[in-house]
Amino acid sequence: MCSVRYFSLLCGCLEIPFAFSRVTIYRYRFMPAPSTTSAPTNPTQLPDVSGHFGAYGGVFVPETLMTALADLTAAYEKARTDPVFQKELRHHLKEFAGRPTELYFAERLTEHCGGAKIYFKREDLLHTGAHKINNALAQALLAKRMGKKRIIAETGAGQHGVATAAACAKFGLECVVYMGAHDMERQALNVFRMRLMGAEVRGVEAGQKTLKEAINEAMRDWVTNVRSTHYILGTAYGSHPYPMMVRDFHRVIGQEAKEQMLAREGRLPDELVACVGGGSNAIGLFFDFLQDEKVRMFGVEAGGHGITKGEHAARFAGGRLGVLQGCKTFILQDADGQIELTHSVSAGLDYAAVGPEHAYYRDKGRIEFAYATDDEVLAAFQLCARQEGIIPALESTHALVHGMKRAKALAKDKIVLINLSGRGDKDVQQVAAILAATK
Ligand SMILES: *Cc1c(COP(=O)(O)O)cnc(C)c1O
Image (cartoon, rainbow, N blue to C red; front, side, top):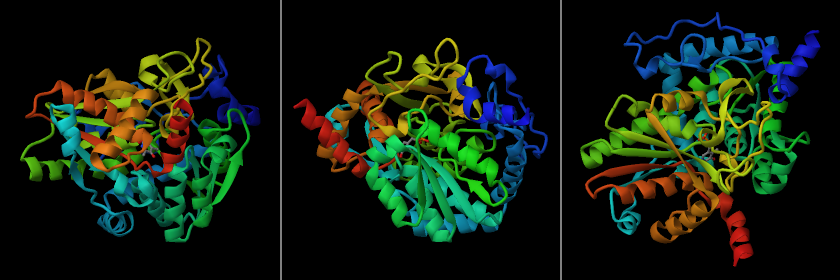
């Protein structure tokens, strides 16, 4: 009985219709109340004690992992208010990752668009090439503090795997990265980078052999080795406390951006734009602006070939409420609850579900959502390279596409801040192949 439930929860049930009714929803009892005492509308109070952002989020895991999640929550609650942990983290973010990242005025793109001033937050300048190192480094430090010497992670394109491998090498932790076999072929260079830094990369042959299957395998490993092992999840997704914790580790993006913008322009930006895969770089930028009501925020999803079934990953354009891999949120699924295939030119946005906090603020109208198609992204990728001498990651280019549309729509005295979540070095071969094929 127990093993049936275990099996259904971990691998099958979230993709099998009617099995939803068999999912036990464990209310979180272990957690201390949030430390803040501000009004209930204060976003810093979310998630609530059960890990929910309104109707979204929560904890959906087999019983075996409940203790691990409770321990993690407790350890994180302690670390986040511990000045020693925070000081050490700040030190590594500076010395190892390269923070603070620059706020950059994209002068020629601004001219090209002819409207609002365009600024980039340069997360692409971070060590290992994207914002992901903020979270990987912080979670590795937390694992060390918890006495866990073995780290596991999932990765899609390999960016989170590379960031995790780097953090583990730095702290002397054992590192196993699960990656879909298909993704390993597509991202051979990242596989090599991870192995160079001492990580073991385990290929996953199940299903579509991509990110979703890699997460399932990582969770199976965690259930088996939970005592020795910490699971470094790579985005603001999954069961509580991950969406909250990963968000907090990326908040530094928005905190820096706010300070830099005030210093540079003497005021806040009018609009923020960030791409949304699981949602970590976006919520990291947005979070410290949530209470600045005049600042509009746009999350940009992957429109792929356009919004038809199986051809995109825009969860808010074609998804609905469901549960996938530990989390209740917007999911691309068919009428029976089967997870739909997704497509995007950028592997980092190619996932059927979106972080729960984004679903919450989208309902509230606080974060607005748009999508960019593959074709728009390929054009903007080349434009940015030519106009600014910056090659953005294909993921980040989704934000760029929408940010440029917004800049065109706004007057010259307005400011649009785009999160350049990563650099495009990893993408140049793929883009070269696509461009060659379409010539
Ligand atoms: C992984 C990745 C993303 C998507 O992840 P989020 O959690 O939504 O931020 C975006 N940009 C880059 C460069 C990435 O590597």
